[in-house]
Length: 188
Image: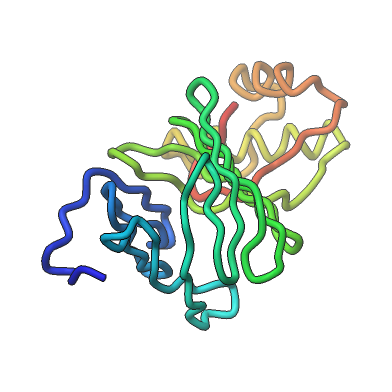
């Protein structure tokens, strides 16, 4: 493997938690990955899974398949989406990467990361935290968010404010409103 001092990245992906990786044609480096291409074209290094223990990788990449010890991934690019599907440490994984988001699916998690300002930067994972069905509760939450964004004190906002009505209408009134766990603001 080449040393980190020789590494000149040509791209990278960083999520809000600090995880991600930088890469070039012959190396991928990040907090959880360090994999380099040998002179014979095979790849060697380590990847840290959810348990945090480095897993040795000794693999080949050919015909869109990255296959070796502890890893078997198919990598395909269609249009503007790259999809990586396979297994790592006997766990099925699926990554879908576009310019706007990254979707991660494994047997134990399902996370979405949304593009934020900056080249290759994405938010933290968005997860479903609640499903709201009561229109009065939805209006109260939206009123609170609207006032918080305007800098006013949420206090007891009138339920019929214009901003709240238009947001509530876009959510379909009594229809289910799904609230992702994000930091700051809302999409309405």
